[in-house]
Amino acid sequence: MSQKASTTDKTIRISETPGLYIHVPFCKTKCPYCDFYSVTDLSIKDAWLHALQIEMDLYRYDFGTFETLYIGGGTPTVLSDDDLGNLFDALHARFTFSADAEITIEANPDDITKDRLIFLRSLGANRLSVGVQSFEEDELRFLKRRHAAAGAERALSLVTEAGFTNFGIDLMYGLPGQTDERWLKTLRKALAFEPTHLSCYELTLEETTVLGKMKMAGQFASLAEEEGQRFFLLTSRFLQEHGFVHYEISNFARGDEYCSRHNRKYWRHAPYLGLGPGAHSFQDGVRWWSYRSVEQYCTALEGDLKPVGGSETLSSEQLRLERLFLGLRTREGVTMHDAFGEFSSEPLLSQIKKSGLVTTRDNRIVPTVKGFLVADRLPLMFPG
Ligand code: SF4
Image 1 (tube, rainbow, N blue to C red):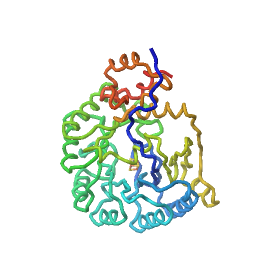
Image 2: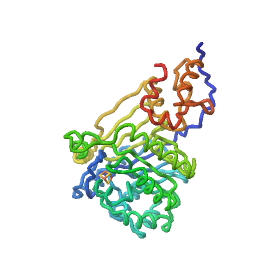
Image 3: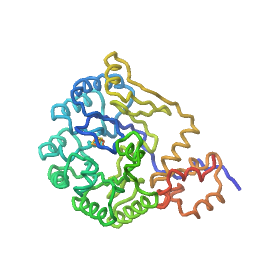
Image 4: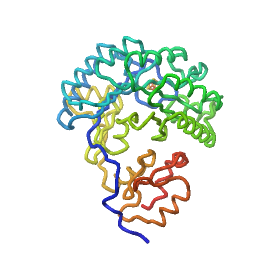
C-alpha cells in the first residue's frame, strides 16, 4: 500500500545561508595519490591572486551574507603572510560574513609555526584543518608528504597554544603494509592532540594520479574491497568509542557543534560560491565550475569574464536524486520525500530497514555504519 508522503514531515532545519570556498591552486610538491587541482609553479601566484580579486568583483552582489568561509586547495599555507593578509582584506572588502561565521583554513604541518598560527587567528580563521595523513615515517615517505612524523607532532602541539580550539586532522588508511595496529597507533597519536574533528580517508587511486598509473601498470596493488571495509569499520568503532560522532562516511566530530558547517552546505544543497580554478558553485538549482587550468582561469578574468568552464541546471527530480545520494552519505540521512518521491511505501521501507543498512530517526531515513559501507549503492534501494 502506498500513501502520499506527508508534507509536514519533521525535518532537520536546513540552513540556506551561503558558504564561500576559495581554491588556492598551489602546492610545494605534488603528492602521488592526489587528484585535487594544484600546480607547483608558484611564479603565477601573483597573477592568480589578482585574477581572484577580479572574480570576487564579478560575484560580489550575487550571494548574501556568508555563514562559512573555507580556504582550501592545494595548500593555502604555501601563501606568505602578506598574500594571506591581502586575500582576507580582499574578501572583507567585497563580501559580508555572519558574526559567528565558521572560517576554516587548510594547513600543511610543514608550514605551521606558532607565529603563523597566531597570524591566521588574527585574520579571523577559527577552524584549522591539518593534513597529516600518518604518523609513521615509512607511510609518509610512501605518500611523498613534505613533512616527517615529528614535524606533524610539533605542528599539532602548537595549534591549541595558538588559540585554535576547533581543529581537524586528516588521516589516511589502506596504505601498503599498514596493519590494524599501526593504523590504531596513528589514530591514538592523533587523539592525543585532542582534535575536534577527524577525516579518515581510504587511499583511493584515480587513474590520473601517479599511484593510479602505477596501479594500472601492475606496479602497485590497492587494498581489496573487504580489507578497506575492515579498516572502515575499525575506524568507526574506535572513534565512536572515543566520543566522536561518525557524521559522514569519512568524517568524525567530537560533537554536533564540531561537524563541518561548510561541508554540510554541499550535502544539503545550500547555496555556495566557489572561487579559484576548478572551484564549483551552486545556487537556485544551477551548478557551475571554473576552468581547472590556472592559466585559462587568469586569462578569462583578465578580460573581465567569469571563468566558467561548465554548468548544469538540475530539475527538481534531479535535485531530489542528488539529495538522496548525498544525504545517504551522512548521518542526517534524507526525508521520506527525497527517498520515495511523491509516494512513500511503508512495506518497502520495512523491507529496506530489514537489510540493516538504514534506519529511521525523526521521520528521516538515515544510514547505519554498515550502510555507509555501501553508500553508493544505497540510493538504488529506493524507487525511481
Ligand atoms: S599537499 Fe594536498 S593538495 Fe597538495 S598535492 Fe598533496 S594532497 Fe594534494
